[in-house]
Amino acid sequence: SNTLLNGKEVEVATYKNIFDSIENKKNLKLIPFEEVTEKSVLISPFESDKDLLTLKPPLHLGIGCNKGVDFETIERSFELFLDKFSLKRDQIKNIASFEAKRDEKGLLEFAKRYDFEIKFFTKEEINLLTYNFSFSFAKKYFDIKGVAEPAALLASRYRELVIKKEVFFKSVTIAGAV
Image (cartoon, rainbow, N blue to C red; front, side):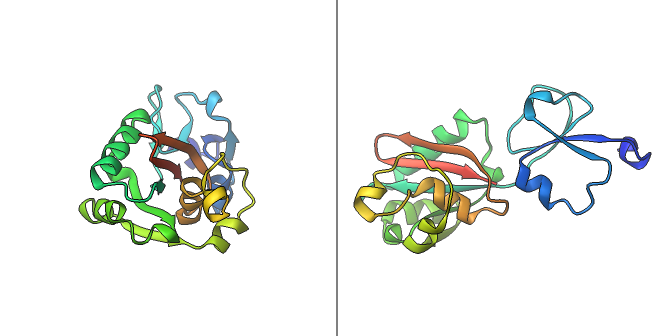
């Protein structure tokens, strides 16, 4: 924008890890999302009610599911997740889960039908994360910190959890990270 070219300060509302990754921050000021104005730049997967420049980084989804959950349940959970957060299918870069889910037919079919790359993470990779995750039954069954939130973080570029896990049909969990 002209503001940046003229050496004036530009307010940027984004997540800390994204802001820290910007090489030349001269004239950029990180502001909280609540302080966004029409003159700000927003870097977020979410829409703003203000008319401003918005850059949408791709979203990485972590998906957990109960054993044997079918494709239709995962697909419906995905649709509800997108709808709840006003997201579009093309904003999703990939999906991820825990390695024990590698053989889940419903999850694999979902990835194939939607042409999502799917990544699986090990117990060690998940448990190395130092984030304070939401409660998860995965702790009881697999001795891991969680599935949806850790998998989303591990699959993401900036390691910012932007959507805590949501539970659908008591059988599918989905979280989002950038």
